[in-house]
Length: 435
Image 1 (cartoon, rainbow, N blue to C red):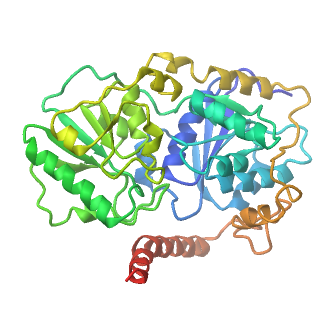
Image 2 (cartoon, rainbow, N blue to C red; image 1 turned 60 degrees about the vertical axis):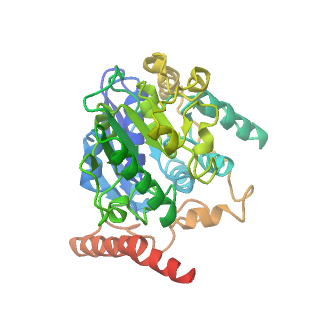
């Protein structure tokens, strides 16, 4: 029977990092046709979010647990839900699609499966999209992305009907109405852009110089994580570490916290290519995308060509305030024109239609199969301990039983050691290799 039209929808979100948890949970609330019960699952890995990172999102789940891929598939076999949001990197989505196809193969009805991208899609467009193919809805955060997504799917002969235009779910907040006292400049840091010590040190020094040139301004360095925490991307050289011993001016502070709360007091947002730029533009906050290190695909700031926001620190030091191009904004899903309230209507209607599909939904049908990608798919699935048919491989973590207290302690210890190796040891080894 179709899901009851009166009781809350049961929505599950599987996420593998803090940013994707934020996107997944906020998306779940935006696309649900009615009230929901939210069950959260955190895929165990190097970027599993901490309690502090989860709290920053501001969305509380009715239940929350950390799982391996095998544990999650078992939960989806044993527990009912109406909608599943896969907030994962592309390979994770593909693995879950194949695993879920097997888990649900004998069910008369299955959940609606939704996936998409956390923010700006500026690299690995084709690779990422084909790894997400097979979900019932593949969300595009803008009109431009929706057009690109459909073109990729149609270009390889895959069904493009799942592509659904929405907007970034975390847009919102009070519109910028004018200057604060003091005038506040915020630099939104990114974990891996730029990725070299020289470039990150350069940007930090320019921020310090801007603060010294404008002692009447408050200058904030908005950090993505605290030491020891991981994000969607590995941060090998945190700005707080680079800032040690610099002697920061009194009007420059390093801050954490919810980006929306920081934007409440921002008069100029500066970044290399952070999605925070889109959040700021949505609210009408003057926004500068830096050109100091060039306009390059590796930096992601090439996405902002035509935006009117590209500027250098020299220009900002001299008082320049970029003016965004309205046509560019309209194509990027920024919804600064007030259409954000209706941006998720199509997705909600589509999900309601799928939930009421007579006889239930057909099996999940990803584009990649052992026939279409026999040299690629097995490796993608194996990274999540799944065989080519979607079954857990022999020895897959927790494939057969719930972990006991000793196994849970060992996991926490191993994960901590892994994160330390990724963040502290690996960068040293790489630098030694460059000598």
